[in-house]
View: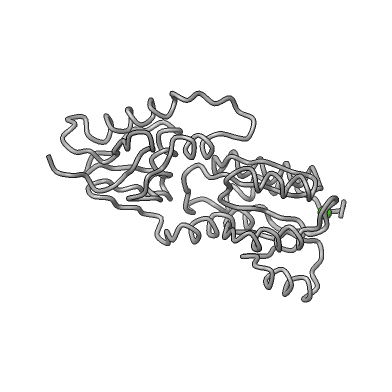
Amino acid sequence: MKNFSTGRASLIKSKQDNRGLTKGGKMRVLIIEDERRLADNIAQVLREREKYAVDISEDGLDGFYMFQSNPYDLVILDLMLPGMGGLEILRRIRQNGKTTPVLILSARDSTDDIVQGLNYGSDDYLTKPFDLGELVARCKSLIRRAYGVAAPLIRIGELSIDTAARRVQAGRRVLNLTGMEYQTLVYLAMRQGQIVSKEQLLEHLYDFNWERFSNVIEVYISALRRKIDPTRQQQYIRTCRGQGYLLDEPSTK
Ligand code: CA
């Protein structure tokens, strides 16, 4: 399994391949893969290109523990792992009723393994060696599908979020958002009408070991409100006291 090669060239290639594809909000991905170099390459592309928060585990048992302890939007899972095999991890994930999309990576390309993986509830399957660009495209598609967002354009009232171009408009006005503001907005928009807690936002905006400051979310929300509607006539993002935030069509004042 050490013969997999992902050099600088494939990283550059993946950047070109993915131009124009959908960009979601900051999503959190868990990679369970014992080939460190491969895991690092995947993580680098997902972090730099897609701004995903990425955690890596090189051991099956540790990986399953991380999955249980943190909310993930996608799991990238190797099959042959120390500690616990990928198929067993997948079986346990589905046994616990979790529907988190799982993309299997495997050096094994026998039909049996593919069929078994799909039977156990994997959502997609890539055989090594693969192109990083294709991996990223499939990750994005799995995450989109999981949230039931087929089109890269999200419209809520006068607000439109073009996730392919990372462009947000309020009516005809294009908003100038920082990366974190944009990610906060997309995360809320993908859960339109649902209350999202501050903890959920923090967990999805930051990598596993990053320091967390509880007041940053208030800062992003307040900036977003100001930028979406400087006159404060319309309220898209509501504060649900003690529970979190909710983005929906504005109530007219
Ligand atoms: Ca392996």
